[in-house]
Length: 282
Image 1 (cartoon, helix red, strand yellow):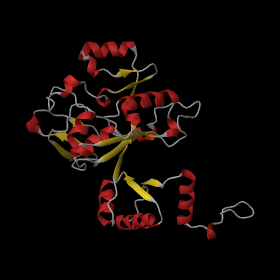
Image 2 (cartoon, one colour; image 1 turned 45 degrees about the horizontal axis):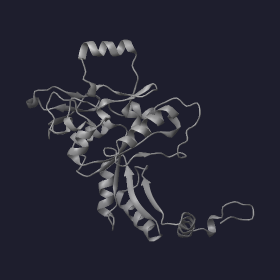
Image 3 (cartoon, helix red, strand yellow; image 1 turned 135 degrees about the horizontal axis):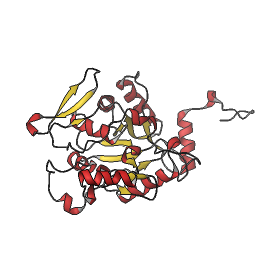
Image 4 (cartoon, helix red, strand yellow; image 1 turned 90 degrees about the vertical axis):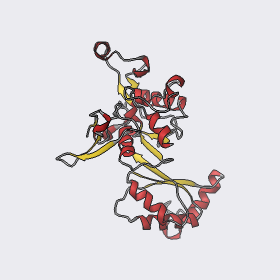
């Protein structure tokens, strides 16, 4: 409600009235997803808040958080179950969570799509890689006519590669291996203020082409199809400093042990009985 000076009159406003006004404008029920930021609010309070919002006409489609235990507790205390959306900084963080027992079958997960991009290498560096590793065509990044490529682990396998139910230890693991094994519903997001139009084009095309793997698409908090001119970046921004890289040497069925270094940084190490000394770097 606006006052005579066109300022918002909070004294005569109510959440229920605002929800009704929005529903009249959009012509349908108002469905929202709550992105939890505070770490000082007990899960029981969050669940009560969600129940209260539902009584005021809001449909809570889901609750998202980087804190997995917080999400589990909110669902436990609420009167009506709410969909849990688990946020990660990178695809590598999701991989680590799978091995640490934090991920359950059927979970809904989102991570920054910038972790799927790699800056295009020079011809000289690619020649060096080819001479040393002799990668197959399926192991090479998918190239786009810009300075970025899609990393191999992010790309779905072709039909021939998907036939074996489990990968051999000589194969490189992919996100799709984890999606199939844990029956994950995967979506991605970016930091809208730090992504160039070319990087956004690459990710949009790639995610849309592979919607069976990235079922929930890409969340975009800006104006649809619009970016700010002059921005250079992949949308990963400062999350690149806390997000972990994908380790293609570890697959979803590998036995992994949790260890901490002297700085209390968690590492994932393959069980020695597997015969592989692979580590997901901190």
